[in-house]
Amino acid sequence: MTKVLLIGGGGFIGARLALRCKSAGFSVRVADIQVPSGEQVLADGIEYVVGDFNDNADLDRMLDGVDIVVHLVHRAMLLGLNSSMLPEIERNVEPAIRLFDRCLDHPRARLLFVSSGGTVYGDPDEKSPIAEQAALRPISVYGTSKSMIEKVLGLYVAQRGLQAMVVRPGNAYGPGQLPFKGQGLIPTVMASALQGKPVTIYGDGTAVRDYVHVDDIAQGIVAAIQCGSNGEAYNIGTGRGVSINALVNDFIRPVMSAQGLDIELRYVESRGVDVGYNVLDTTKLSRECGFVAQMRLEDGIADTWSWIQKNYAGVE
Image (cartoon, rainbow, N blue to C red; front, side):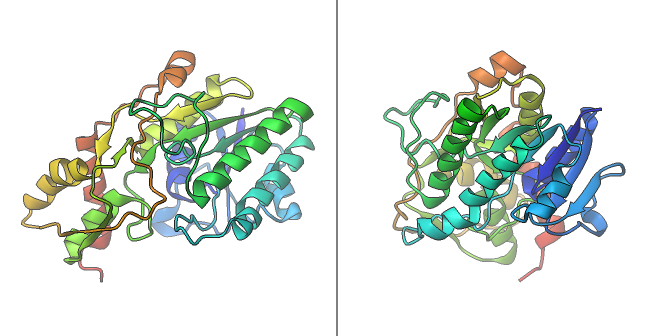
């Protein structure tokens, strides 16, 4: 049986991916800095390893006997203009490179790096879905470090024979995504409405994003594992763009209004690190692996709202 290691598998995407890998028939090992407890435990038959993948001894325990390594970890997602690249390189780029080196010592292991389709492309020249061959021109520290890791991984594939590929998800959302963390507008808007807090919108709300449900991201990653080609990158998205204003007013606000809740928006100056348009062309993953996102945005909003109500109603 194919054994999959999910480094950072206890996180938002990793938790859903673990379940999807298990249902696909893989043996699943989740590696993270702590073991989930109580309701966080995913399912019987999933192995958990506690450790820091930046520690060689811990990493070797994680890699022992695995066929596929999925790198999901990103420490301290930074978007501010004042964020420095040097600590970002130390936190995220250097550990990824050490992981690549260790994978070379485990020749049976293939590696899949989860990058960021929402940030690595930067602002496109045209407002049309972005394909994988587009230039990587990130405008944030987060996107830059993701693209750096991609470039180094490409070098390892070309020169050192590492078996690897990259996936680039769009703007992830869904149950389990924590609000008020600087990422995840949908849960933040919902939890803010529940708690009577205003929502800060950077810019005028016309920025367009490709919102893709976490279940679709997990399925897209599994599709890439099963059918993707060595050295390739694959977008995971819906191919459909929605502006921030439309997301809030056309999709989230009706759900809130039906329960007598209001959404207060406060528009402030743009941060300068947010692209104005990001919609992903998903033709490649569809053509090569048969993947098409299934979750409609309105259904995903309802799914997310149910989780937010359960976990954030009355929480200050």
